[in-house]
Length: 339
Image 1: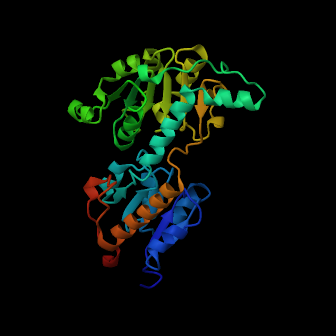
Image 2: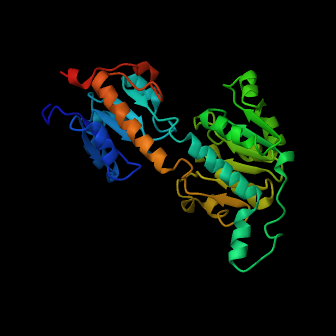
Image 3: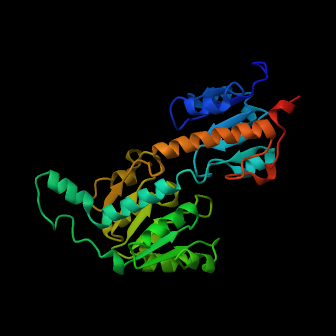
């Protein structure tokens, strides 16, 4: 291929560093343009003529696709969530869209369990107390006996099921609410199906593992929090938009619920959110910097699979089987067939 004919792949807001992993997949068959780009004008200029876009947090909009042009074949999400991928729009335009839905299942499940156990066993106040010179088994309060308690999972997809398997080792019961999973399937996972109000009322720990979409945005609002037990723990390692931050801050500061373990926020940095700033220092709140997905292995897997999926679309016109989220664009013209 000549340089002019070589397809361009644009990383709008790369999640990782230098694209050494991706270059090993692309070889000389693809030209990579790496962001971030300063402002919409620079972004639109960078994507012009691209054959593929790789997005992380960048929203897929009509304006972005228009700027790329009619030769755009594929848009890939560097991650699990698809809330910014706009699959409906991609399908309308005949553009393949895909994510990598299973590259970090073990990582998120392990991180979730770590947050639950650290909170339940009061490890953070114990650590800060002891390193500050206070040797006191009562500091942080008495932990709960998990073998007499109930855990409730909202969303029983890949990660939800992995979390359920781990929670069953500690909790007496595991409940789940998911309209897309039948009760018999849940029993096969050792989980009892419930409706959301029942789950909120009965669970000692409520864990969010559902996707973010128009139906689930703000799912955990003041009403939902009010249905929870006053000593319950809310865990969110899924998407920040699932939770009404103002309602959560009020619930945590007034004793509506017992505590929260949070890995995700809106905006991404909780220091930029007034509700979250009010609760970051509370002893009943445990936080991490949206890193539940992260390990050296998950990073490598995500990068390789996105690059391999993009190259597959450009070479064959066919999307990856796993993670295909724009079904009306099942097959596109391979790049080599471009007029």
